[in-house]
Length: 98
Length: 155
Image (cartoon, rainbow over all chains, first blue to last red; front, side, top):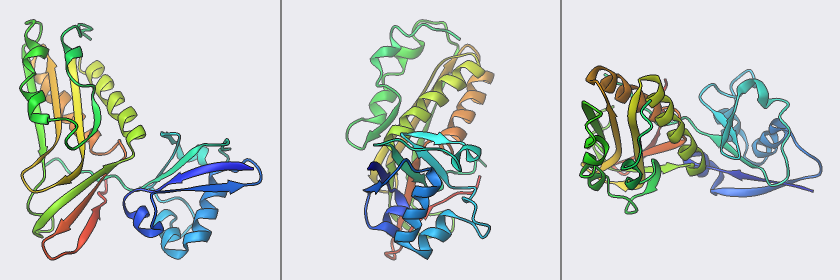
């Protein structure tokens, strides 16, 4: 079994009700595989927050594996390893310089 | 880039700290360490402060800042070194707190030092823009009326 830790911050922690959880899968998953498991578990609210109408990850959402952001091009086929930490990074609070 | 960091090592490492772990105003009081060698002609600082009114005009009771610390520390370190190199600055520092802040409390400190003010002004501007958009740091505004909102800016 492969163990993936998913961590949740900000609004995602409100959707899931938790700051992290362990996701167990039979074989090495891709990022998309794990995202699908998370969406299946938490439903439409999570799906709409992470994915747009075309099923693409929203442009203001970033995926990090072991604290490193993954480029959007790499996400689809990115294979995870046992004990990897996956974070769906919500939109970052910024600010407009006037 | 000036690689003289002999005194700057006394300053805390740049990055994320929990409120109470680090006193931003104490770091401000120490910045003579950065320029006392005389190699730099300009130092500028920025303090980000919790505001009492949101951008939409709602009265703010407090803000909560949280961070994916492992990522935020990597990103903040990278921003500091990249901005320093880009503008040939001798020092770029960003210290960002997490926790609960009432209006008027400081949340983040940015310090930039270099030979000339033009580069220092450009450097601090870029450092600020980048810390607001690149590290995984999240802000929740809690309003006087009891509602709250996670701030999600479009960039």
